Amino acid sequence: MTIQLVPADLLAKADKILFVAHLALGDFTYMQNSFRAFSRAYPHIKIHLWIDELRRTPDQSQWEHLRKYSLYDWVNSCDMFAKVYTETYNPPLFEQSIKEAQAEAYPIVVSLAVHNRHRYVNLIRNISKDGFIVGQKKRVRFLDIRKHYIYSKLNAFIPAYKVTREQQAGKLDIPHISRIYAGWFHQLFNLDIPTADLFPFVTIPQQWHDDASQQIANWGFSADEKIVFLNSFSKSRDRTWSLERIFELIIKMKKLEKWSGVKFVVNVVPEKLPEAQAMHAQYQLGGVQLFSAVENFFQLPALLSRCHLIISVETAVMHLANAVNVPVIALMRLTSPEWVPINAEITTLVKVSNRKAWIDDISVDQVVAALP
Image (cartoon, rainbow, N blue to C red):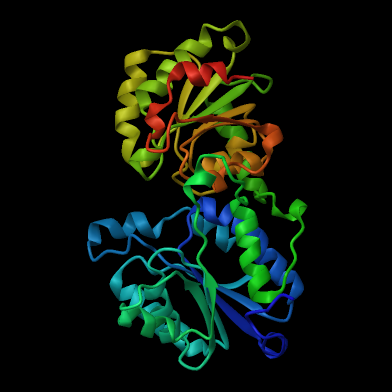
């Protein structure tokens, strides 16, 4: 018998709920399905979402960049959320957001944070002094009195999930991250989410489809030309491929008969744009354009939806490829098997050679060999 963490009678009379999470684009790509399932099961409950910024800093030079986090464009376009807290990227706004949330007097607050779990327990109890709070909890050492005390503030908890080395090595099965998220919502609210409802989706406003068409025309690409989208960037070094390899891959693909006539779009994060422009000028390759979604998040999925193949390192782009139903070659480490793109029919995996290896361990020839 399943024990539902949030009591059914509390859900029946609650008018709103606050979810707290430190979301990246990849997280939301799959967690969005669970939020949608909750909104359908409890239409009388308004969903409020607190997006906590792990990079929160007192360094004012970083604030403008953090304020424009592209995830906010996506989340704010979703009609399932009645309120979204996004101003958590600097200490003053963070404190202001806490006061704003306290004024809501939330009857239920759920933390889905998987980093610094105990700190988020303190945060949600601070937000809701008397409400029912649920958070992630990992095993605590017997003598760690401080954490035992912090976790005692919870009314209920979700046990932390952990990927074993056997699972990383492929010796044991591991549920996909979408199923892990769905499992949390099952524990919390007794929701059963069908596998078909776990596939990622993104609803792109028409203006950004039009924007992508205009961008492609401005590049001089004709409507019937095939486009390959290449992404080598990630926030972490161990998941990043070098720009040099991207251009080397383009050169090798151009020499192949089946790929000689395609156009290429190279995704570039804004801070690396000068470096990419210099390299682009150095190689002088025709049919290659640089791209950066600096205006709005939806520029990215809109352009991805117009491509015929996406080649990406282990980051949100490879999951968005599944969301827009475009074939993807995903370059992955062995440390996060639960994060493989969910649609195996249109996904080709190229993995590193061992558990400690970084993405840079993957050669250009390995990617060429994986081309459809």
